[in-house]
Amino acid sequence: MSTGRPTALLLNAGHALDHLFLLIFATAVGTIAADWGMVWQDLMPYTVGAFVMFGLGSLPAGRLGDLWGRRAMMVIFFLGMGVSGLLIALTSGVWTLAAALTLMGVFSSIYHPVGIPMLVQGSKNPGFTIGVNGLFGNLGIAVAAILTGLLVKHIGWRAAFAVPGGLALLCGVLFLAVVPREEMAPAKRPRKSVDLPRAVMARVLAVMTLAAISSSLIFNFTTNGNGQLLAERLRGLVDDPATLGVLLAVVYTIASLAQLVVGKLIDRYPLKWVYLPIVAAQAPLFLLAAPAGGWPLYVTVVAFMIFVFGAIPFVDAMIVQYVDDRMRSRVAGMRLTVSFGVASLAVYVLGPTVKAAGFGTLLTVMAAISAFTTLCVALLPGRLPVGAPAPLAAAPVAQR
Image (cartoon, helix red, strand yellow):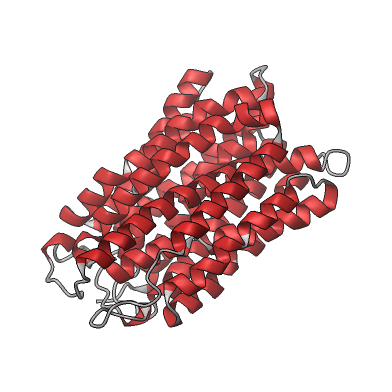
């Protein structure tokens, strides 16, 4: 059974909304801080609850997706995100803001372990399907930059949360209306995939977990810090918040296209030999960006974000290839709990780190993390053992 076009469109839109919501605060934080008489570095730690719950909530979300049903969980996702956005818009202080952002993190945790497994149901080219989904997710980041900048400039920062909240509620109603009910929960379906030897599976799970942690740190450092990085390093060249939002949106839009290319490649070649050069390219680009300023810095940001976004589809591709559909949401939830639980530290320490040491130090740290990710990926098996599904597209894929 394959996923229909209306369902696929809504699931891709959900990915865009998920990332859009998580990045609104990072884009609007300077304005919110100024409104409340603070500096943005001191306000950033109050969003850590959202990212902690984005990780921790993935575990129960994945379990419920497999055992209860993915359609019902996606309805809860859309409606919960919509209500959370409206609540954030109504906050009046740092602690109510922190509470509302944390609630948003609870609902945002549903998408990745539930929505992506649901999307690749019956896909003949799951790598490309994941790449398209990743493109939508990162276009959500791009839209967050430009939409938030425009709403903050012309209406106010509260509208930057209220407008996407309304869109999420609309998507929830549409999802409930057009997506057919599941005949049975994923965990109750017949087993279809090929078992891997335990040693190979243990190595894959170890690499998956370590790479997910390090890549999540990089993703959160960059997407939450790029706005302020450009504001600092382009000061005097570009000072208008809306223009900075457009420049940031251009970065994310260009970088997002890399996922389409990567998706095609991982349907045809072993994951390791596509993944390895992509993560290996990140460290030198971060080191180039560390001392740069002005337009050379902007070009370097575009370059390193192409490889940061290009690396995103790989962990989901590993889950599709190595894990039976009956438990994919649970495995995805476990890896997200670990990786984003650790990566939430990135959001917590971002402001204090930049305040104490500057962006140059932060970019150097990211280069070291990227080098570690490269070492992890080098441990992946080059090709699957005999009897396992070699190309990703050939792996039997049920509801995901």
